[in-house]
Each structure stands twice: as structure tokens, then as C-alpha cells.
Length: 234
Image (cartoon, rainbow, N blue to C red; front, side, top):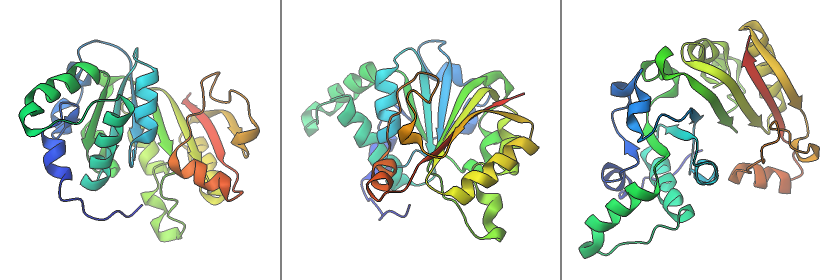
């Protein structure tokens, strides 16, 4: 998704207590970024952050890391997290107190900026990431661009270096979905569940609620069926 430059985004991110600007320094020690030793789930390509905001607020017993490459996206994600957690807007005079408030309220979520094609630079075996969320990533339909897909074999091999659990993936693009099934099989991931029409499935995510993204709602309104899968390392 392309987004216009947001001149305020960089400054707001740098002053946010739940944004990390140097993720490579946390490789193999991401648990230290949080106040507790809870299991960690990550979202790759978090966009405007509506999904991860709702997910993290609902599951306080899980720590989340949401990654994107674009400051404007992360800036919107930061604001959407604050809106979801109902953190009040501060005046200049209240700014310090409000940052302390944010730190107390948003305890189980970190936003960070990094190129996901080099994801193994920031996560390692000791991080033991228990789940990866990939929601409506760029399908890169042209053959020469397939290696950029977040579900491509090149990426799946990197995930093996730190994943200690499963991948939750959903997309509107049938071509990407079918290709992803093959990528996963070739990389020795077991496909535990799949569907070509998520809306018709009850409790597809192993009993967990399906939190709809902005894209998901838009595609459903257009009559496009959502494809989804759960895959796990063998």
C-alpha cells in the first residue's frame, strides 16, 4: 500500500514508548524489550496497525511485535494503537505525563521499522517466536518479483531461524495463496488448515476470533473471498 508522506510520523515514533528504532540490537533477546517473559507473536507488514492494536488489547497475556518499513504506516499504526487503547491526546504541557501513561497502558506491544526481506537480522533462535501473522501482503504477481513475497521460499527459510510455532496467513489473491501452499510444502512446513472462503468458516483460527483488517472488510464488500491457512514447521 502506498501512503503519502506524513511529516509528523518520525517525531511521534521516536518519542513513543512502544516504538523501537533499533530492532537489530534486540536479536535473540526480544523478551528483554518487554516487562514480562510472555510468549511473543509478530505481524509482518502491519500497515496502519488496526489489526495488531485490536489483537494486543484483547490478549494481554501475549507480547506482540509489529513490523513495517514505512514511517507513515507506522505513524498511523502508533495513532491507531493509542485510539484502540483509548489513550487521551495530550497538550504540550501534558506531554511528559502522557508518555508515561502510554508506557503503563501499552505493555505488550512494540512497533518497529525494518526491511522484512532481512528479517533474520533482527530475530534469532533464542527469541522463540511462537506465531507469525501475514495479512494481505503484496502479492507481487509478476514472476520476476515473486521472491519479494512474504510467503516465498526465501522468506520461509528465514522464518525457520526463529519460528517456534505457526504461521497465520490470509489474502484476497488466489494466485498468491496457491503459490504459497507450494512454497510452504517445499520448505517442510505442514499445512494444518486452509480455506478458500474464510467468511464461511467458524472459528477457523483454532477457536480464536477472526479480527478483520481494513483490507479484509473492503474485499468482502467487493465480493472477493478471503483465503486463509495455518502452517507449522514439521
